[in-house]
Image 1 (cartoon, rainbow, N blue to C red):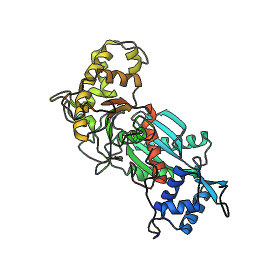
Image 2 (image 1 turned 30 degrees about the vertical axis):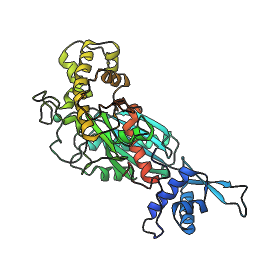
Image 3 (image 1 turned 180 degrees about the horizontal axis):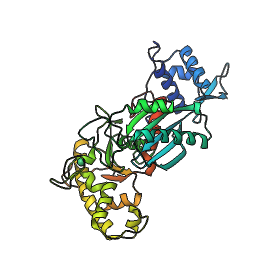
Length: 398
Ligand SMILES: [Zn+2]
C-alpha cells in the first residue's frame, strides 16, 4: 500500500479543501478508530476544519462512527472509522478484441470482475459497450451508482497522433484523434482517468501484488503488444503525454522482422502474444481447435516451445536495457497472458551479465512474475481512482 502516516499535514488557510479532505480520510484509514481531537492534532488542522470535513465525509458514507472511547476523563470522544464500502471505483481495460472490468471497494478489495468480448474496439462501438458493461457491473454487485467515485479506463498506448499511430493489431484503431477522457466522461457521467495498460498494471502490482514492498520497479505488460510501466521513487513515470514505456517498439534485432510501425526488428514482433500467433502461423504446423498459448505449452507443441526460446532471447535483451536505464529493484512480467507462459519465458531468459542489476547483493530476483494475473490492468485503473480520492500525497497516483 501507499505509505501510511507519511506525515502529510493539512492546510488551515482553506487553500485546498480537497487536499485537507484526503489528509483526514487517509489519517483515519491508517489510524482508525480516531477522534476529532486526535485527527486535528495529527493532521495540523483546526478542530473546526476537522469537524466540517468529518461531517461531509460521514454524510457521503466514507466515514462512520464507532462509538466513544472509554476509560478517558471527561466527555468521551466520538470515534470515527473508515468505511471501505461507502464508495467504489471501476476499472476497465480495453483490448482490441475484449474488455475487462473490475469493481473495487475503497480498500481495494475486488467486488466484481468480468471479461467480455469486444468485436469492434473502435470508439463508436467500444464506448457504448463499456457504458453497458459498467451498468451491469454496478447492478450485479448491488452497489448504488451515486457512490461511484469514477472509472479508470485503461488502454494500450500511445495516446494522440505520433509516429507510433498506425493500424497495428496491438492498438485499437480510431482513438488517436479524439479526446478519450472527455468522450468517456460524457458517456459514463462520472470522473474518468485514462491510463496506459502497463502503467495501470504496475500500479496494481504495487498496491496488492508482487511489488507491494517496492518503490522502484519496472513492469513489462503483455497486452496484445507489449508495454512498460515504470515506478521510480514511488511515482509512476508517465512522460509528457502519458506515453512513456513504449517498449514494444524498441529494436532488439537490427534489420529483423518488419513491424507495422515501419521499423524492423521491434521487440513486439518477437515477444508479444501477437508475435506468438504470427510465429505459430509461420511455423505452419497443425494447431488443435480452440488452442491457447497455455494449452500448446502444456502439450509441448514444438513450434510453441521454439517461440518461447526466441521470445525469451529478445526479452532478455530488453530487460537488460530496462535495468541499465532505470536501476529497478526487479522487473516484473505479467498481464493478459497465462501464468504458465510467463513462467516458461522466465525460465528461458538469458539475462545479460553486463547489467547494473547483475550484482551480488540482491534482495529480489532480477525478474519476477506479476501476481495480479489477467485483471491486473483493470484493477490498476480502479485503484488509481480510489487513491486519487483518499491519498493526500501524489505518491504513485495522479
Ligand atoms: Zn515497431
